[in-house]
Length: 82
Image (cartoon, rainbow, N blue to C red):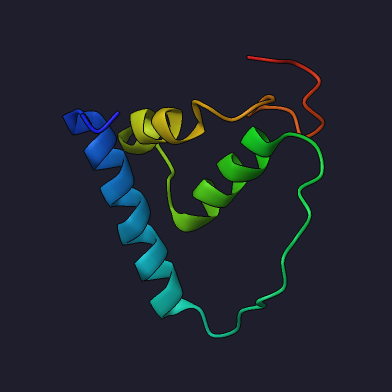
């Protein structure tokens, strides 16, 4: 722990940058917590895509951010495990 490589630093920097960009652009938000049904990995992947983590340029960052979550990033119910 404590030693982050350049790819991890890039992934976290992109996450913070896109979170800030999205926060400034949103007109209406809801501060209610949402229950995650099914795979946590799938839910985060969908959220990352909504932030703008789209395309090959973000592929490695998505992989790093999803790495330690349980479930499948391709199936909402977690039917197939990666």
